[in-house]
Amino acid sequence: MLWARELSHAFGAIRALDGITFQLDRGQTLVIFGPNGAGKTTLLRVLAGLVRPAGGSAGVDGGRRSIGWIGHQSQLYGHLTVAENLHFWGTLYDVPAQELERRRAELLARLGLEARAGQQVRTLSRGETQRAAIARALIHDPPVLLLDEPFTGLDRLAADELGRLLGELAARGRATVLVTHDVEEGTELASDIAFMRAGRFVAYGPRDGRDAATLTAAYREVVGGA
Amino acid sequence: MAPTSSKRKVLFIEDEAALQTSYARFFSARYEMAFARTGAEAMQQLESFDPEVLVLDLRLPDTDGIALLQRIRQKRATIPVVVTTAYVSMEPLMHVLDLGHSAYLVKPFDLNELAARIDAVGP
Image (tube, rainbow over all chains, first blue to last red):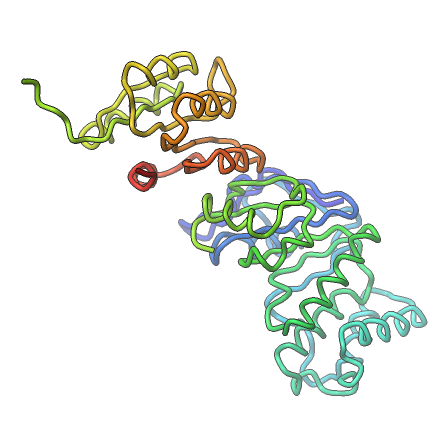
């Protein structure tokens, strides 16, 4: 469903990606842990087709329209309301009108944004904007999700709700790559784990039920810090 | 009376000749060194050289590095081991951490980083 083979990329003398290889099938969630500057965002941008890698290749079944993307920018229009933004993005992805209406209502409810639906995005708090960005990413019900620090700015309740939502999407066959610097944050969602350092996977494999404490110890060993 | 060395005794278990050469050049002033290229040689050196620290590559010609580490632990339960590997799978990392008294370093690494790990592992 989603694959990368020997991906490499550099920004000047800095190797952002160095031999990244993995494959993700339906229902799998790969959580990539790494410190700032490890290359996580570059990897997601390559997978999303936003950056052409210097070497190697990557692909997604169904191409770029199959991807739901949450990056550091919300990709929402500040002068439009939350509902208008979701309508805009749904239309852009050719979601049929009736389906779009249903999905928009469902996502607004699910992400606790019903009361903010008619509010301009520029008036939202950081956490509300992040929730609206999540709704935007899911409005076309994409089979592949690429999530860059999706819990950023969310309070505990909203983070828990996003975790539940992502778990349900995985159970429905969605394949997800989630990157984060926080091992505690993404562990429970992961079917597969990668630790990333200096553009490389320094450990990669199935989570096999390992808990956050075990993975934190392993992360400290091969990446440092945490 | 022969002078006694205050340098730590480190046994490098590594079959790559180029790495052995690098280790010898970089670490000879710092550690009292011995080398083993196979698991069998490592077990002999464990007795004859009596190292304080091991640097163990997980891929050896005659044995799996994890299996060798388990055998070493039967003889020297708490000897510090710095495991080096080119493998990126999660499994060996978890095995090594479970065995305790170990550090884990993924190749390629800087020799200063290896030195820091050797110096950091107890006692």
